[in-house]
Image (cartoon, rainbow, N blue to C red; front, side, top):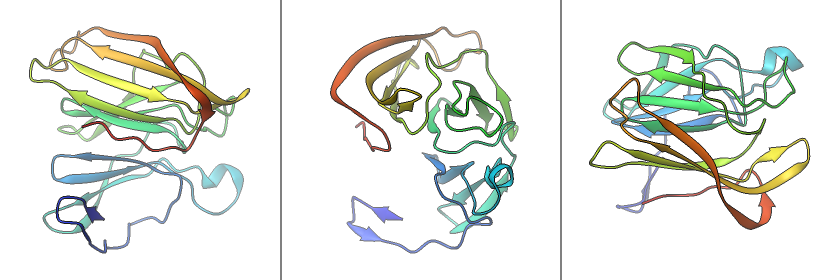
Length: 187
């Protein structure tokens, strides 16, 4: 783990399950590792397993599993929840547009009705929750069956604290080139 304020790297304890192509989110005092892939046979290598690294104790803790194993997905936090969307799922397209929500307080994942506009893997995203409890999420690029995409989608949430809040998703902009597996930061 790298602390950009102190410009120091810290070794982490081994995860409970080795994985690659996992989705990560930093929320509160935890770094969440969601899904991913392990080495092995096709179907068995898609991981539903999730865990979080406790910054204070410097230990990994197991949390509940995804409903559908996935890897190369995007992940973000809004309010007191974490979301994972898109990615590769063994029994599907193979790409998916589904979104699962993790309730931190109840330690449960559930699929939500909102879908991404396309079945996509390897996009990146940035999110920000504002003082008025509204939020913005930007999804950049990713790969569909047609190759790397240059689309930027915007999701606007009117109030992250209300279970009935409105989520609006739209095609926001385009990048000059299609790309996937890229990283972005939003400050």
